[in-house]
Length: 152
Image (cartoon, rainbow, N blue to C red):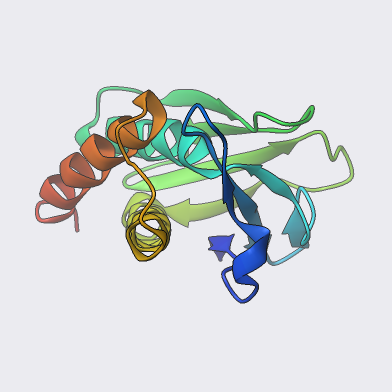
């Protein structure tokens, strides 16, 4: 089980910079615990866009390897194909953690849910979604939903 978490239980923990960057709590919950950390805060749309894009590439079969970086720290995720519809995720920056496997479908569904939550938070607060990162996230979610219709 590898799930991305957007902690929206504390509304004050989300903010939008003057440039439109959305900051908030984002981390992965795995069998081995939270990564990078349960209280991790980062640029949520700027991270989720590339995360969803990498998963879309796996779902479409256009790649077998990808790396997605957190933007506020030395952490990243390395993805590798591990068989039909399976992705192995390595958690770079926490060398004690073992890689974990999940289906592309489960990862993509979870990423879309996280992205939809971020967009709902933006809408609820009246925040603009016209910045490059949020527009990329919107496009990624749309592509992911199309791919999910064909991924088993």
